[in-house]
Image (cartoon, rainbow, N blue to C red; front, side, top):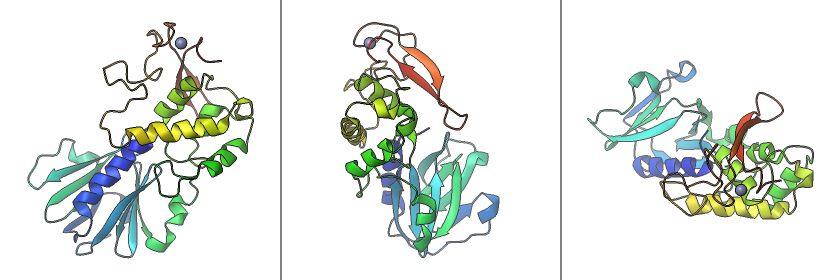
Length: 259
Ligand SMILES: [Zn+2]
């Protein structure tokens, strides 16, 4: 599951490759939109909304989402793709660039003035121009019985956090991921820290929540199960969390630093 900072960078790179130029190829490799042809239309821009991407072309927006395994590659013409062609869900080309979305979880075409139907449910976007910490706190606090880790991942509360940030935020605030939202001290502080962490990583290629870029030290707990806590030396635990299958996530925590 990608984090919002990855999607933000993807949008920026796609924007640089596509914006202001006409498409020479628009190849939707999903059945529902296979007949769509946007050749000759100018791409106005590519923006991220939380973890969603909107590529605005003429009167339409191409809505895509990376979901679990998705990724966009940008190639010069004639360059060999680094992924098999059968994984491509959409190909957009102009005179200079070939952009390919591989294994995207969502590919659809919507009318520009109906973008809200696909991203209108999102809470304030941590990396967006509409970022509103008070509104994010209000939405998070609306259900005090939910586990904080699940609430942070719910894109309707605030948009952009994935599992890495949810786990790291819980560590940094000294709380177990399963603590109910209603028992979290200083929810505004959690939201402020979330914004700071993801903003700091926005333009970095390698993400770090510790400030350290050395392998194995880029996170406090995420992906470090069985290894010593960087703060207290206790072995980091790993478990699966969440009330339902839909919200279930692998979670990492330090049993001493978090309570
Ligand atoms: Zn610890």
